[in-house]
Every structure is written in structure tokens, then in C-alpha cells.
Amino acid sequence: MGKIEERIGANVRQAREALGISQSDLGVDMEGLLGKSWTRQAVSAAEAGGRAFAAAEVVALATALLIKPADLFEPRLDTDPGDVVNEVIARGARSAVSVAAVQQRYQSEVREFARELADEHASLLPAFSDALAELEQKHADGLGHKDELKFAHDVNVRLEKTRKSDG
Image: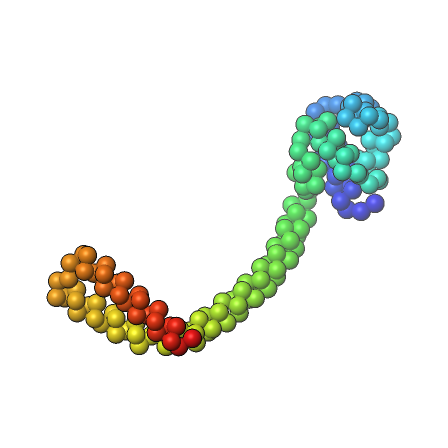
């Protein structure tokens, strides 16, 4: 069998031994969860990584062993730390490549969008600059709050007219 079956099997053994139950007892517990018992030999084969697991079996094993199903897929605590580190590095490298590709794609899309936006609204810049200069002058002249709001609305209307006439 493959590495995943070996990992699940090793984790089953570790959890079973931590609970202090025999392979036969685990097999009986599986009957209550799956409707069919596992023999001691079936549990032994599972712990040795010698059989594939159905999803229902993974859930039943985790339930019988009082752990989460995901715990059966994790590296064991007694695994060689170098193996765990190598696995984490490999996963990280795959993730980093994926993240870099996505990041590069979105950076290109953002740059393209910024160019399109700049091209589309280039004609608004002179009108906006004029409106800003006028607002600064009115503010310096002591324009009141209501007057500032009306002026802002008027500027918005002028910018909209400029944008429509250029479109």
C-alpha cells in the first residue's frame, strides 16, 4: 500500500495504544460503528498500512479512538522530525509556487485595469484640477458648511458632464 495507508495505520496504532485497548477490542468497536466487526488480523493489517480505507472506516476509526478523522492523516508524534520538516518544506514550496503564480496574474490584471482607468478618465483631470483650485479659493474666502456642500455637488455635476461629453 501507499504512504497514506501507512500513516493512517501508524496513527491508528498510536491512538489505540494510548487508549490501552487491544486490536480485538478495536475490531469489536468497529462493529458498533460500521455494522460489521473487524478481526484482530484486520486491525493488524490496517495498522501495518496493508489496506486501503473507505471514508466511513476512517470516520469510524477516529470515533472509536476518540480522535478527529483528520488526526489519522497527520504525521505521528514519533515520526522522525527530519521527515516532518521535509514534508512541510515540500508542501510550503508547492504553496509558494501557487501563491506566486496567482499574485503575478493579479498584479498584471491590476496594472491593466489602472491603465484602462487612467486612459478612460484622463479628460477629467483638467476639470478636476480647476474644481479643486476653485474649492481651495472658496475655502480661503471662508465658505460656510452649506456652501461647501453645494459647491461639492456642483463640482460633481460638472465632472459628470465632462465625462459624458468625452464618452
